[in-house]
Image (cartoon, rainbow, N blue to C red):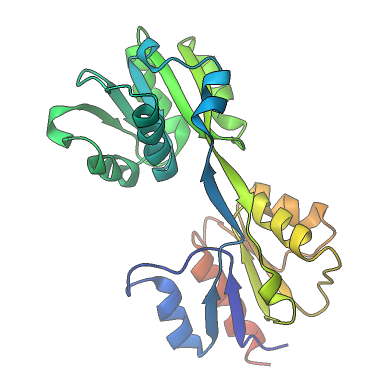
Length: 248
């Protein structure tokens, strides 16, 4: 079956230069965006119940923009003035750039990884005497604590925010040729919102091994998988798939 409509389980891009818009124009397909999950902050009382005292830490490990927002939210609600001496270890340039929302960048000690968490650990390893805090969500990739434990550093994980299933009830009678997922939580949301969902002719696209596994474990077929060495992005994977099926 040809692909005419695609639903991407993420918020709509904020810039007009998104490759999804290029894909839509190129392949003449309709692409909609709808987050299947969203993030909510954990109450400061619950954070305190984790026995977290921010003054005990000299370095913060930040893996996402959400981690940045909720670290400073909790600091504010705990009336903790983050010292200028605090060190920030950011997983990517995007996270480090976002940090400027809260601190004067050039006046802080900020260390930036290239992209992946293992790459960031190379920088963390050089600062073994620091006491690290990892603000995280309730769903943390197992890779992260595994990598930190290998370093032999003093570190603490604290849940500052959580991933919540979004209400998709308005999509009950809306059908798309392709559903695009980027995390196992997206599949969880699909099943919670539509427990009787039948894949039938719907194609499922999944990004990352954990998402692909979640698709198959739920009993569905993963028709479009990314990334691969030849196809590093989801838009490229969709483009290649559409080229083939829409020719038929």
